[in-house]
Length: 131
Image (cartoon, rainbow, N blue to C red; front, side):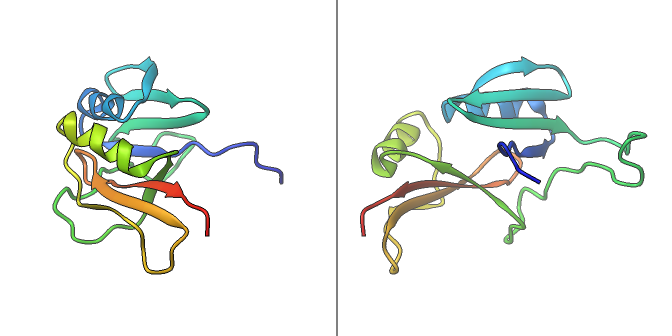
């Protein structure tokens, strides 16, 4: 199998609220309905879907949004940027709160910061640096 791209789907409580949040991160809605949105930023694609019961083509598997107060994460969306510090400054100026950063981890090679979206999905803003 040759994969030509990857486009995560996040399950959210309110598609309109989440789409508004991701617009603040530079995404634009290519499609936006009450229960679904397809957002793009350059070549990055992000799908948002409202919670729901299993459809016929996904038997036995319902979609549910994460717990917004959970202290654990089962996955993270990593957004690659040219300048993590600048991106974080712009986000903070736009009222987006960060969990941490930007900082260079002890192993080096990157600058990163973390935040959560309105549904608690973990997002990493990441800049690869020369080592």
